[in-house]
Image 1 (tube, rainbow, N blue to C red):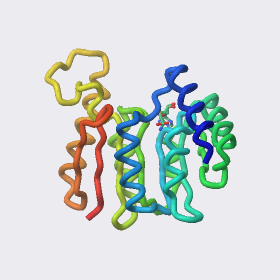
Image 2: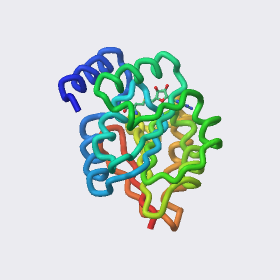
Image 3: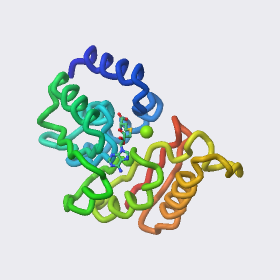
Length: 195
Ligand code: SAH
Ligand code: MG
């Protein structure tokens, strides 16, 4: 992959305030992917394809990433970016609302990366668990949401997202099939491994 092109994609996304994965978070996930060599990854929240492009490097031969994005302009930009770094054969973009698309999918995924609307995390978790393979891993970004999730302060306008993120984390922690840790890296990263 052309690292120079990748840096340009990242730079442009940052300039346009597109919420791409933070460097620290990417480092942690890359390590996990390196160790697990996934064949099939599901990503919820493509944006302009930056994280999917980064993850594609760690796929096993002939591996594939399915990634969902509902904003048409971002889908177009993602397709352009993916072409630029020549990973079209590794990334499959599904355009639409993940709430509608997920129930139509029936694949087995080694990794599910949740990185979209925070208010929908409990639903995304349900769908992720349905399709998660043996020893599969669920990764979820932004689970601490600028510290709101762990604070008592409850009056800000994001309280629905916060409530749903708390529910999501509680469900992960209560699920006996999963071994979960939450890292204070980036905006909060949950890592849940199927035992
Ligand atoms: N994973 C990307 C960043 C994703 S940002 C990266 O690190 O490079 C979150 C994206 O999810 C946004 O582009 C937003 O449009 C999309 N999104 C939010 N809710 C969604 C939903 N319900 N269905 C599909 N896409 C959604
Ligand atoms: Mg994110």
